[in-house]
Image (cartoon, rainbow, N blue to C red):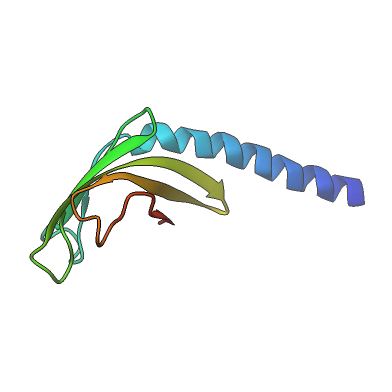
Length: 103
């Protein structure tokens, strides 16, 4: 019984990784950010298949515009998260080069 449970557990992670790899093809493209369910767009991310992205827009609650470039990777454990590291920034005092976070 214990072996069966281990096999099921391992199978879930193997299938999960395969599904996670498909997310990379699904995320490629331009995405908009909205705080009001799409009525207005405050920023955009352009995910490229090579693992880089470009992001631009207005920082929430400010009139400050920004443009950043970053690398990203998708992590799939229980849910899919996009993790990015800033490589170029027009507002380095707010989004410095090297900043890393996951959504």
